[in-house]
Image (cartoon, rainbow, N blue to C red):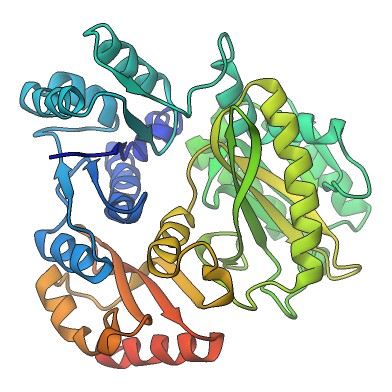
Length: 448
C-alpha cells in the first residue's frame, strides 16, 4: 500500500522528565495513562493514506467508525507489544513493529515521519532508521546544532525570556519574576500579595494545568490558607522539583465574546512561520485545559487580528533560533483592554491539531466560515467503563455525518482506564453545536 506519512504518537514521551520525577509508582502510572490515553485522537491527524503508531491499539470499532465517517480508505494502526513511557524506544525494541515500519518506508521512499513532539528518544529513533539507509524525511527536526532549542522554548522560563526580548504594542506578556527555588517562590508570592496583585505560580516544565497555581487578590481574606496551600503543593508534587519557578501577574480574562483564553498553532517550515489555526481554549478556573472551540464566531475579528500579529512575530523569532515544526501560543485576553497577553508556548502538536485536521478533511481550506466546532478530550460519562461498541451504539443518532450532512459528533478518544471519552462536535453554529452537546448528555443519561 502507498502511504504519505508515518505518525509517531509519542505523547507521554514528551513529558518523560516530569513523569519520571513522580515519586509514587501508582501516581506515575496514572500520569503515563493520562498521556497515552490521548493517542486515539492521532488517527484524525493528517487526513488519509497514513500509518499511525500508537502505544496501544486504537479500538477497532472506533478506528473503523472514524475512517468511514471521514472517508479515509488507506490507514493502518501499528503498536508495540510492550511500552512504558517512551514510544520511540518501544519501537526500536519491538522487532515485529520495527520490521513493519521499515517495510512501509522501503515501499514508500521519501515518506514523511512525523511525531507529536521531537524528543531525545524520537531523535534517537530517526538516527536508528537513517543508519539503515532508509529514504524518509522529518520536517520537524530543528536546524543543525539546534536540538537544544526544543526544551529551552518548551520551558516556561525559556519561552518567556525570548518573548520578553520582542515585547511591543503587538506582543504583550505578563510581568513575571523567575525564582531559583521554592523558598524564593514563596517570598515572591508574598511580595505579589502585599502589592495586591493576583498572580500565577508555574513550574518550569508544567503542562495542561499540571504545575500551575492561581492566586487572586480577591482571596486576601484567606491569604494564610492560600500560602499554606502553595507550600503544600510545592512540597507534595514533583512537578515543582525542577528548581526554577516563574511567578507572574495573573491577567484576569475577558469572558464576554470568548472564554478569554485564545490560542494559536503555528508550523515553522524552512520557508518561515505559518499560522495553521486560531481557537478559544476551554479551561477551568484552576487553569486546567479541557478542550477548544474554533471556526465560525469562535473569536471576533479584532481579537483574531491581534493574535495573528503577535503569533507571526513570535513565530519569526523562534524560526530564527532554529526551531522547526508545530508549536502553539497560549494567550489570556485581558478584561481591561481586550489585549491578548502571551502566557506560554508549547513546542509540539497541540490539543486542537486533530480538530483542525478534521475540519480540513470535511470542509477544505475555507472550513472556518462553514462550521463551529467544539472539542473536549476528557468527558466523564458515568461510573462504569463502557466498550467502544456500546458508546457508539448509544450515540449513533448524532454521530457524524448525521443523515450524510456535514455535522455531528465524532468520538476522538475512548479511555481504556476510566469511564471517559473525547469528542468533536461539528455544527453550523455555536447554538447547534451546544444543542448537540446537550443531546449527547441525554443519550448517555448524564444529568447536567
